[in-house]
Image (tube, rainbow, N blue to C red; front, side, top):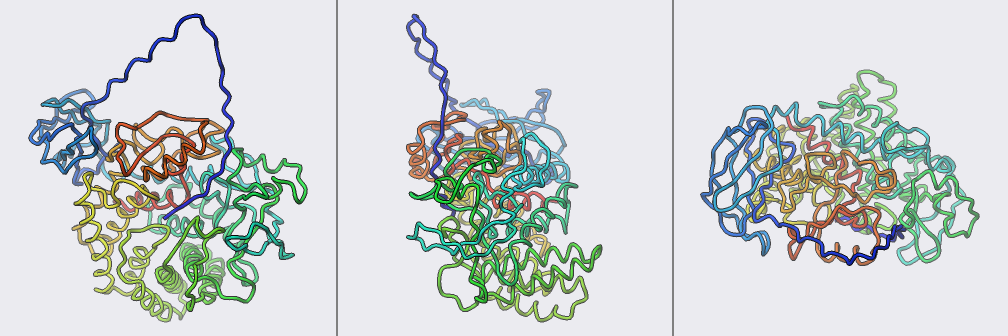
Length: 598
């Protein structure tokens, strides 16, 4: 799970006017008696298509119609039996099956029988028309979050930033209870890369994950024309983060009582380059950002990092094998070296970020299985004799990882590892592991009123839903078996609007999506972070604690309180990182999930 520490002071300027007229009470909003939730992007023509009617009482049997963009009725259907209550206002959730709708077009669902409701618009079309725009939008999110001198023009009004990272000082990794930083005397070039999320930290852990997903999309397609350059930007930074056998994990630092870090000021990134600061000044580390390493020189590398970073380099070798064999062999050599440094005897905390609580990863056999599988695939593409050796290692680590309980996430890459290993050595064990994982998720989705495998909310909610969609589609590509196709479609739909709040959790996708993401660049430039995947609904105590810590806001799009539950809330407000913060790992998961739909 993700747990981000936040301490962001905000300044809100209020323009006040005076009037002798007595204030009038605000009109009470008209609350919808019933609402219809759909995948706001739409469905491929032959997919199972289920809309959800949230009503004050069971509306089973209620007549529903689908109308086209001209208001003409094209399908008549009825609401199915209630799946249970959503909250005290909406005490029934009735599925409405639209699967018979196959003709391309734009539609809405209407119910006018006991209750009245109308859905947002959605499309029916071939998958090749619906989802490639979402993949291209996710690339735009990465472009907006580039660090360094190499920027892409766009509405986000970016400029070169953090140029001092080019000669960044390396510091010893502090203990959790240590507030001081001690320089090692080493400097490295850490310029470039992407900001991890709404702040300006840069992490090897999440960057490698994002590059794995992006390079799978580029390798297997369909890929937008802009993706190759974005991968090159990310790989250039990842290459800088491995020097002389040392892997560096992070640029930037969280603040504490002694100094401010990357979470502690709401500003555009280029502002840091203009800070006139000296050592000991409170904002010194915002301009001269510290770099931390995974291990001291000569020590083995935490196996989770060694596996996923090796996988990113090996995927680069696969992409280049046919066009630039020399570059491919160089990337393969780097991948093999990093993989060989994995500390497979570790029994302590895995290295992710500083502090580890930002990304508290608990497993690492999945990372090594993926790293070895990508090494073997790269070796195969280059005619390297180590294919069998790395395939055997991938099989060993895949067996150790076993069938987990999660779909694809930044913490668990086992679904990709199994699918990649299957390309090398098809195995019933891999198929059974994937089925076991998916069967548990199908059971969990059946118990949820909206059919969500991840439940009603929580950390990484939207990304976990999209990760389940990707996992099921990877299984189908492995085996040709469609048994989880409807499940995959339903999980994607939850992320794209078929949730209790009716909110698409991918910015720019559909008609109703976050207007005020917890993203400094987006908020301060008033530009939409199109393509970014936000967390989505989260536990009520987490949302409420953030709202109480930051009473002022620079952007709020209103409350969705009438759709909240006792255990989950959603707030479209830039203060609330727990619901509204996009990140590169969330967005990379979405990119892969959308690209896999054919």
